[in-house]
Image (cartoon, rainbow, N blue to C red; front, side, top):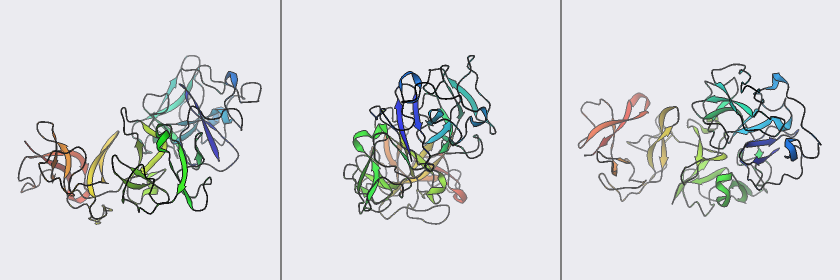
Length: 371
């Protein structure tokens, strides 16, 4: 298992141990840095070591942390581990072994013997692999010092500094037999976790974020009411959906360190449709679009309000089969989905405007934007 220590203003640092590779959670600035392998010590060295760790082998740069000194292994972007090489005095960084991601330097002096700062590989689309070296994924970098997303190795069973357990996968150690690991509402922005009794609300069932009543391996996402969503580390965990970061429901809406949940592909015209490529939502649940940084949007199940019909003013929710989107005057109203270029038009009122989302064989999704 691995524990995290947050070095304020610099980065998330991972204290690697000899255990198995772990699932990532973020850390808290108040995490104990007084002991344990790789805890941060004075002067940028390893606690109790009396000096800086040995220089990283050049061949370990950007590797999966099994080949680098513990103090060279950083948690970048909340859920991606990487052996982080130091920047050269001129600000340059080693090239990646493969892929098109660009090396960047953050010049802030960092613990672990990096007086000129640290390097990472910058990428565009979180949770995608295309730009990164083989085996690495692009992670949202809200909690790293880099301006943009960075490549990292998916982490497993990584325990945060202010929590007893890792949220994914569900069989990670830390909680009792009848307990499950969940995010701590009191330290959400830091990725804090708690052990709690497994609740009875099923996947995609309606939940209260304060009640902590979702089943094992799930958390309640949404305010003021939400849906129980499965934790994940990579897209392959999601059975047709995507593994997307959880974001704090307050400006500037940063990603919760180390925590991601599965989206559920759905048909906005009929949210319960299970015809491929849709997985479908439970009865009474709606379907909305979600933006994806660096790529086209996706559809996902959402809480529905059956009392809000087409044309009604909304904040987030509408009846199933409608979406809360801006009308021509930029007021949020419940509006119907449509297919771009459909003949005859799906819209009896308004014009069909694109949402940059593909519905597979149905075509490009839009909505009937009301005047």
